[in-house]
Length: 195
Image 1 (cartoon, rainbow, N blue to C red):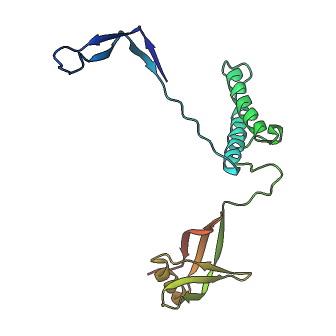
Image 2: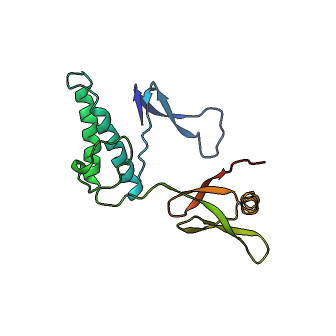
């Protein structure tokens, strides 16, 4: 979007010095006294589905938490209340009651849905190491006193760590990032005297 000032004058005229068999060439001239006063660009991001309202819910919960620390006599209190109202209206438009969102320092999750942890940690010792038909590392089993957990991974260098942990009977803690594709986020080696 641009804002212009001034007038545009269009005239017709003949170009001199051009020989044409049918006569002189007629050309349109554009004399402009216009100039650009200002310009801006507006981008509208269109997102659908859960990521949109999960982010709005998280922002609304955190803003409500911050609002608790702002005194009602503060000059910014009405502005902040109006800002929270905009998030509430956006959430209402997405079909979720903003009254269900409690103040929170963290992500409260979608109301009415069980909250899934963002990461899980498993601690134990390596009991099995898997290789595929080509002899490439394919995963391992971590066993504790209570459970066993199979981890499928082909990441380089994890195979060396897992084989050493199996050989030396080291305790590992494997942190898994939850999501559509669970993946190992980090591996912590716990040992008394690592060499």
